[in-house]
Amino acid sequence: MIALVATFGLIGQIANACTAPERPFLPERSEDVREYADLLRSDFEGYIADIQEYFRCLDAERQRAFQEAREVSEDYGRLVELLE
Image (cartoon, rainbow, N blue to C red; front, top):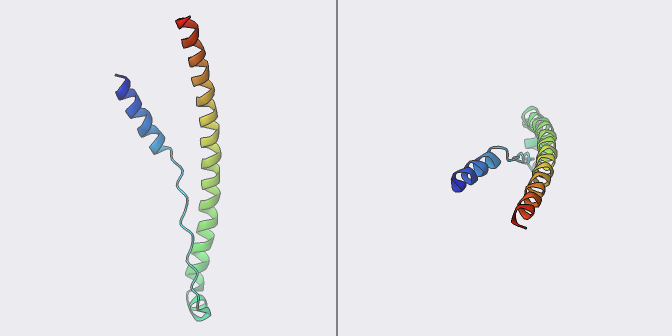
């Protein structure tokens, strides 16, 4: 039973994992930059939006982890009391 709960907990953590966006590609040749300017601009703007979402995800995960740590600490305190 404990293994099953641990497995579901791990799956939940994986599902909530924050994924960093890929850095946009910038060609070295200025001719390529000019030729693909619209596509490159779109890629960079998409990255900026995605990285902001990534930062929000990290902030939320940090808050979740602190809350979980607080709850586990309280559970541990109850365990110690029961064992004394």
